[in-house]
Image (tube, rainbow, N blue to C red; front, side, top):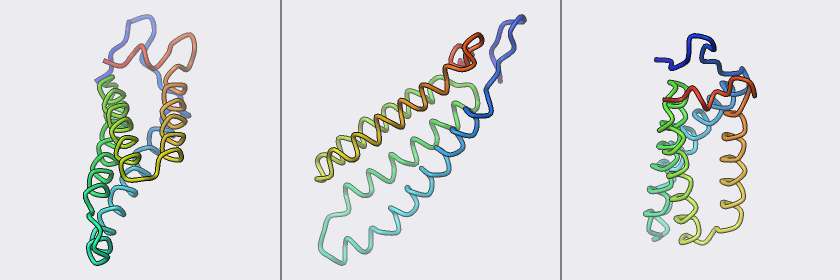
Length: 127
């Protein structure tokens, strides 16, 4: 479903579409790989709680990116929520600054690519 005015059809640049697919693919891979590491942490006597939560948040971010591909603005807010929660989990788990920097940069890039083309922003067409 696309929302647009009759004068300006909903558009998404190739760059935006490629970026969204990269977000989906990488978050699914990270989420699934995180689940494969749970047994290793349990064998070491370490609680896998943070890893499970982080894996679920990665999968949530992939769902959010897919929703943006479907022209749903809620997808962006789901990604923001997942990133904020993942940063908190990372800080509590002991890996702070690297995860914060990566999250802020990734979110900034996503917002940036949704602002093009300037005369007919994809962001304005999200429902």
